[in-house]
Amino acid sequence: MTDSDAEADPDTSHRASDDNDGPDADSDAFAREVDRARELLSTDADALFVGVVTDGEVETTFSQRADDREQEALQPLALLAAHLRLVSNEAGVEPSTVAGDAATLAGQVEEVPTAADDLPGE
Image (cartoon, rainbow, N blue to C red; front, side, top):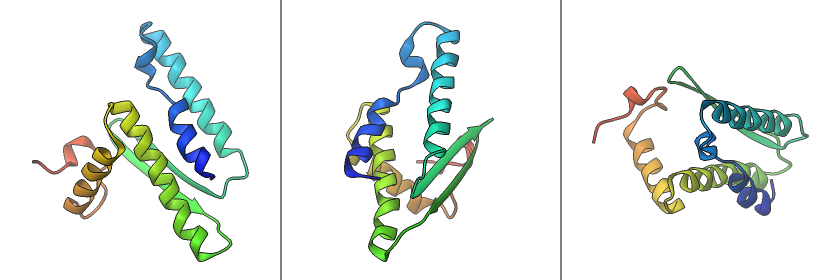
């Protein structure tokens, strides 16, 4: 993943609800994003992080291949940075706000919550 990929990809994604044309438009937008994800997964990627929510349950996977330790260390950070930017764009807040909230949440849980009900209280 290049620096431009990390910055550009989150800006091309959008919420299905951004279309504001009703449930069919939401389904169409979601289907387009799923197709885009499948396209990305079919490329000769060096690293991937996939997260899926089904009926409130979160499933994730991460994998990478790297030629050296520096690349091995930077790829997950590039994916995390791109994800933080995507979430911040969706929420309309600064990436640092999302990063801080994510770091706080990560420090409060022993394992990644798989449902909203599993999040720690404030």
